Image 1 (cartoon, rainbow, N blue to C red):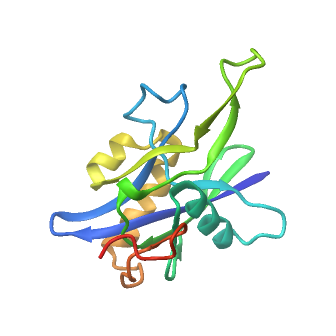
Image 2 (image 1 turned 90 degrees about the horizontal axis):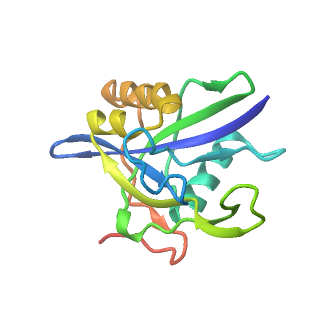
Length: 173
């Protein structure tokens, strides 16, 4: 069985809680919006802890280093052969400053032509209702667990703003 790790970044605003979601890059996702967004996540490498993998994937897909303590959430089955091990934490970042890693993908399939696309072409903050509409369906249980933890004040207190992995400086004043 394969395991992925994910990090749900949350923040509190004057209008309520929000979570950060990413929109997958590449031509397949270009015209998709509702039901296409994702939590930063990826496969756990051999010998890597789930939390380290979640932080690494978040850094790779957003360009920001998670800072602080994360709460483990219940595992989320994706299919019979894959489970996501999610974590949630508070943080804040400027979506306009996010920079994702690039993927090398054959497109169109079976053509032998390869292109480079960002893994996430953008990230954005969403309210619970908007996030539920935007997120890909198999991640809805993961996000519901994060919202429950936030409502029950189970998450640790908000930490300082995240640091950009590129500059090692807080992304916002």
